Length: 283
Length: 357
Image (tube, rainbow over all chains, first blue to last red; front, side, top):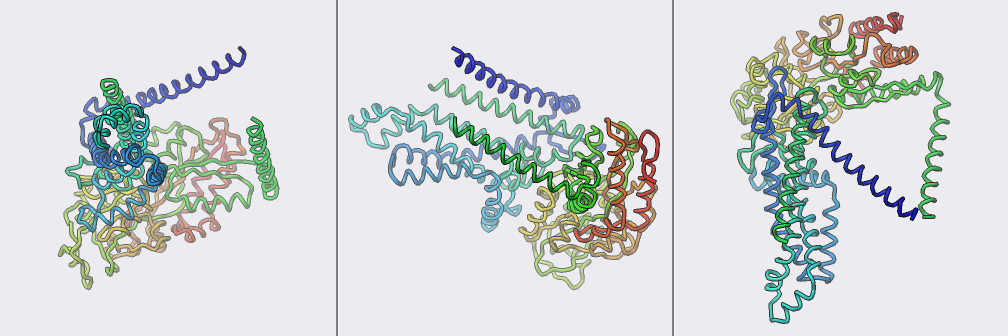
């Protein structure tokens, strides 16, 4: 009885703290962003200037929104075939074999590498390679950043989809096999349909990670505060402009950076909501 | 559960050990009481401050913590009255001074410069006129084989290589000094870009911090960018000679940076030294300042605390502190400037009475 009460109290307390923290963050972001929106109105979102010079101050989030969405979507597209194949390899084709174990370990290892290490590798290894292949801008830009992002989200997408594929009931698969289905028929007619919503959820989570990724992208995207005019041009993302510029920011600039933070918060929220909606529709 | 308790106990014991050892260490050196001076601001002079503050702590027992949070952060911390003094690479202009809650004074502590670094193997002693600086950084010259560059550098041969301009992606006093110089020497730059800690760049790409810019330049053949001298000197980075207002091409060095402060300095020391008219001076040089309130009784600070702060700052202007600047690649203040700073410190008061004499 007594321990029951204590447990209940602890649980309520912990949940309340989570609520408070999330609510407090949203509130302080909104509060900090007010001066920027007051000054620029909704045009803040569609303005492609970022001019911090005193007297000519003019801030807009469009270059960063564009950079964030382009890099994240490209990364997702690059990572999709790789991570989907890897998760089928791990979860079905070579399930339980030594090969799968080694690969699984590698995937977990990749997921655990800090973002700055990916950035270093991208800067010193990937970028010179791309320069040799004839990429302009010394290899800095949207394309290089997208590749690094793709490599970073592959392990997430792979292990999440793998977990879901492993959860597909054996009875279903055995029934299909006993009817004479081949392995690939089982995969595409039984496993994928029943794991569909989980796999999509995995990709949405990975996309969320790509949106907020900061360090590795900052090191490779070129940090030019303009709307990228092509895959190989330099740009900037929302997370990376905040990381770069908050230190010396004050007044309107600080508020604009916070407003970008708020927009990133909203975009991530909207994408999560879309994901949940898709999962609901498909389940 | 048992294990958990043991771990907790172990942590506490460890904590106690390290605490007691710290106290023992303090007793040896502490002559004055356990005063702690808190400061925050610019990252540019941080290696110098860390070195001399440590030495001052060892000698006097006064603990000093300096947070390198950027000039903007230093000004903000002083405005919020959470520090004993702030530090900034750009002086507060009249408007900013008026916004401060009380009167603020500036004292310069050391000199630094911004060097133009480039990566062209085999091309040593690149000379950049102000016209070339403008054309390269405005994106009008995009290749190293441009005839204008060759014209200005007789005897050097330049490759057919794209110019990649690397600037800072973060806000920085280094950018401020660089853009202040560009604004002074190029009306085109003044009109299109202006002066600031971060800018709307016409061309180029950004990298974070001096190490980021230096690293990107060294990785990128054909790159050019600007770097804080303290970093460039320490890393022995290839730098260009820049033309000063007397028309001489000057290699950045401790001596040529120091020369920039030889001219007349206003009594409140608020001056940008860029484009100095001393013929020996490197033109992209500048002071870095410590800022503090003229009336030291604020936020419940004790008189003892205020006096300790002023004594530290007074020592910073002394020969024994200034002579160490060069070891971490800063230029010491000329004697006359240090004297001005000392005079300013003697106008600082506590409840209206002068603290230092």
